[in-house]
Image (cartoon, rainbow, N blue to C red; front, top):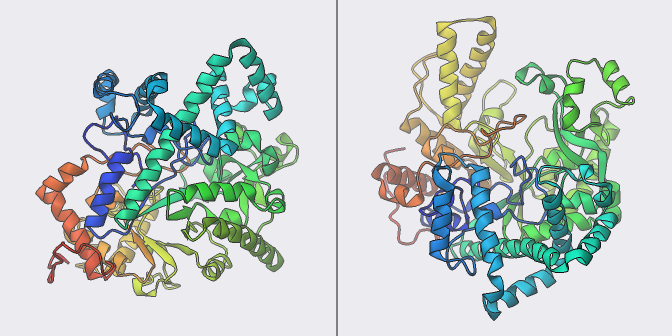
Length: 581
């Protein structure tokens, strides 16, 4: 469940730490062992959680803004700001500009009154600034420069006087000579906001621990080109190469993706430099993450072995669309997208890539200090990756309808390796209920208006429904007679997933409630991504008989498949004959 998705009475248009606290209690009461979140570091202008402007700073958009939570703010001030936010704060999806505007206004107001907050909060804040100075000072300077030069303008378009760390610090001193109080006030504001963020998230971690529910984080494979990490640590990155994924042919609707692949725009790591300094940047990143999360997902773990790279930034993608490789090379100084550092085209290269991944991932595990690590190992996975992850004790993903044998039959859940993470979908995919219904739609549309292209799609749709039915032992009436997605099918799919041998089993919150919406559409940008919110606050879910029944059956599935620990839900009645299954 993304942190932006839950609702609660009185929120400001987005999920926040108080809403997550409510869901932690729900999880504990329903025997759920962990809640998986998307990255919570501060987003860049595109509002993607995978394009953060800092590997450490947290996004204030998730702050609970309530009297008592933010020193100095009153309930009346918050209510007034909520009214000024208008209908956008009650929209079905997150309206980021409106949410950020209201929260920023209230945080600025709180900072303006903070000197009078008393010795306890001001002393706590001072200690936070001193303890976190190693990363916080640079972050605050970077945020100040963003404020001065425009939030959406990348640092390579700032004035020359600010384009290097040395020049930026000299520029800061010049600004201080003009008005030291104003500059220190702005730097203090950005530090104040981070103090509030870490304060709330650390408290949330303590509450989750007290309820025996683990918070699961997410570590993106990259960091935004326009980030304080890249700005102040350029020696750690290849700024002229961007990470991405290779082309996937006609299976993709986007023509650039078909021809060249996905260009994520993240600068590549200079792994040789990082290794030489003991992976300091990574260790700092992971150690801060594990202050909040007891387990975390490593995004695109294949990138720790080798990554597909583009020798241009995404802003130039349109220049190469439709060009031949020779034309593209001529336009780009002879350089073309390629595997970086090397491809898997020989036994020697595979061995070298595996060895590289081994060094890097062992550094991550050392920095994790006991936190559980899960590998997002989806896509075209080299044959050496999963055995290596097994050697390291890292659980990789298993998606049932993608995990088939040579005869096209799904691997039964009992055949999944123990060191795996079983799930039907991620934020980049349709939930399983959406997959089922979209397959039926494709079949119906082909029946009504058959074409050669729809014939290809209908074959895939039948195949997907067959695989899901086999995996979950869903009875079918005959060839091609697929039933609509019913409550019985939903329960069989949940039970089959939870009965898998995998160490972890996870449902998207959309799958829990049968909602077809998708969190993100890879390769696209716009208001359809990263904005999903649940239709109801948790208090409504707990009071509505139909929604209550969904949650009860979900908890029953956890018990039936023996995923509940012995001390789970001591006061909760466990069904002895749950005929819903």
